[in-house]
Length: 178
Image 1 (cartoon, rainbow, N blue to C red):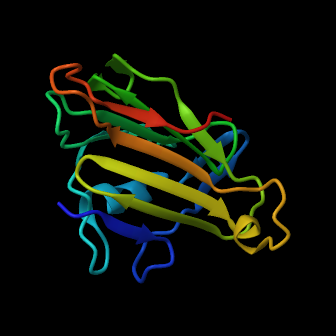
Image 2: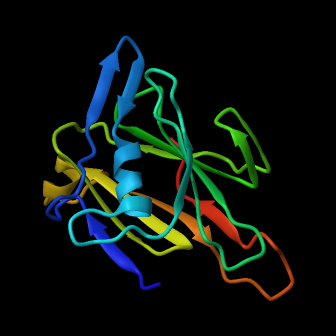
């Protein structure tokens, strides 16, 4: 499958918005953005070809698990959710096995990022059935012509090139933790 570019500025693209911000119970629409990028597509763009394995039916939770179509022996599970500390935090983690949203094994460290500058939120992604690179940033980052300390957050999840036979789990997760 060819690599596709996705952007919050595309026609019909879902927007990254705060959907709940009450007394420390924060939530954003990262699940809808990832559904569109990884699974369903939007407008004239198809999804990357991942599958949506499970999503939370717990009120005020939007944890969702996606599975790639790895070139290696085992597929990767990607857990995506809003952070609990800030309404614009996005958290991702990978796992070997997912039994349910609270039970998984062979998991990675969490990567996350948070836009604290408010205003319009933007995102871009490139991906295919094996890998996604996801960037997100605020209006402030996009329009700050003086440079400075504010940069987009970038998360990579998916396959890595490995020597044949060296590791049946040739995938990973890269990003920052805030």
